[in-house]
Image (tube, rainbow, N blue to C red; front, side, top):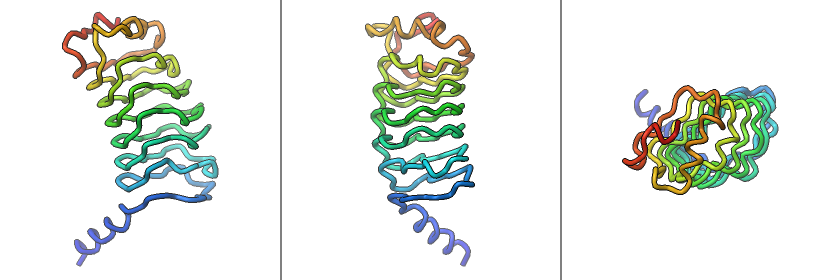
Length: 184
């Protein structure tokens, strides 16, 4: 009986397509993993929100997401994002996961205290907006389209200057001609 109920609840939970007017001012964590959301709902009424997970949905846009001063961790992996435009200013964000999307740029990223960025498994070929995360310590750019032959290589070489706090860089799975010397 319990197994049947668990499966039934999974079916109920995983059909969420939208979230309207959530007014939960005390809420600090939300997790909408594995649903059918096509956009991140406005969360302005969640002023104390520190953690938000929208992994494994069908989110294609962040338009309307806006600023969230208290948010510290945001997970958006395994969606259909092509852009970070609309993300807003995330003045307390320390960890952002946008892996396994279709991002071609980090334009729209404005997180001045971000320490960890996972942008792996996207279509990034350039890093012209990486300066939006000046204190990043852990950067995962694996499985993208970065290449030493790319005219944007000087952007890769500026990582040390643009990200002086960088301690960990993963560029595995990019062009075979890209070496760590190219980004130091």
